[in-house]
Image (cartoon, rainbow, N blue to C red; front, side, top):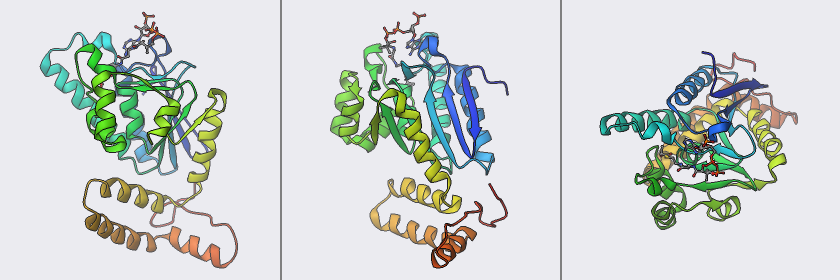
Length: 267
Ligand code: CAA
């Protein structure tokens, strides 16, 4: 697929998807969503990719939400299909086996915040602003905001943001636990890539297991989550990565993780 609305790059096991409609503040139109979905599927099938970074083109915006000009043309059935498409793609993003970092470089509004919320964690630039402003358009969040925001921030903080439509700064988002770290704009990608490179060197099997257990465990009671962890721990022990990691410790050297259960892939 030729990408026109995103930039999709891979370097040393780290993929970067850059939302690329800067004249519309990287708003999510249907064409962009199709390209995003295609890139996510490509990443899911490529075992050499260890970490994904998502960010926005330009200094102003990560993603300013769904494309409002497209939304105005939708009838209710089309709106349901559009929301379903967004949920499907953002679900695929959340369920990728590899870690995903959102590098939020400006406005993350509506669908932009919803994408960031589905990533494993968020680093933001000092100029970043987060918000779910749909209420001011007479609609509500449609790509998961009413569900993921309360789970992350707590119900009351999320209600205040969704009912007022107000934006919050990167610093406020960090104080709410939504953003892990805040950097000057020019240092954001360097910080994101430093963390991405660190994770890319870890075992793929154990990273996948940790991500799956944390995500699935958040939706169940503690006992069920702990049982999932036992199963995943047992699976990890069977991996080449576990043999390499524990042997390297005993041999006092750095581990070199191969990346698959069979250990056949070098990457
Ligand atoms: N959709 C379509 N175009 C958008 C857009 C959006 N979400 N956000 C910005 N743009 C366009 C503007 O129309 C403008 O285009 P023109 O130059 O052709 O007029 C261009 O981007 C620059 O925007 P502004 O001139 O408005 O820039 P600003 O600095 O004055 O304001 C802003 C920036 C506060 C982000 C403002 O653009 C804004 O409020 N945007 C809309 C944000 C929003 O409501 N997002 C939610 C969308 S609905 C949604 O996301 C539903 C869902 O859950 C999936």
